[in-house]
Image (cartoon, rainbow, N blue to C red; front, side, top):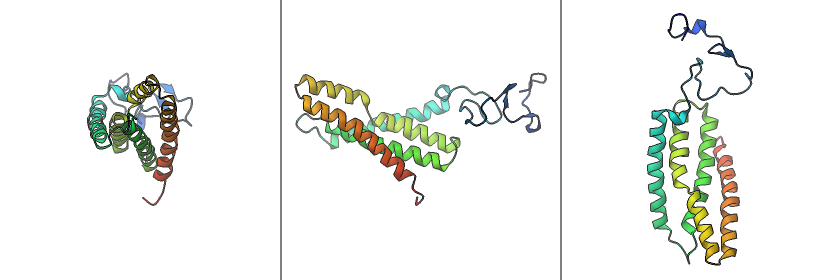
Length: 175
């Protein structure tokens, strides 16, 4: 909006790199996601109802999928195999998703909606750090220190490796 007329600026009145009268001091960096290409501030994504709804729906489906997955893969000898499997699968899928969204174009439109719905919402709810932490503590309280360390290392190292594999697989041009 121009101050004088309280109307939206026309494309001819917009100056690249100048947002609301402030010059972009680092044009080599990406524009903040809270500011659109015309320089209008829309607030952070986590405060916009459209995106809250998209993340919420993804979370509902992700939580449901985790629960069903835990019914499908039972605990073996008290070991948290379902949580380990969910977290490792989720790490791979998150790496794959984010790489595919990134190589497909800028974080606008359906790219942003896919990232928020499937990444933040679905996979954020599908994977579970809280269960991982509690189950590690429960293993130590049960005197199963070796299993606790193995579970801890397997989740962390395996998650990083599988996320990297998802990124590598997602970056293939054969899709």
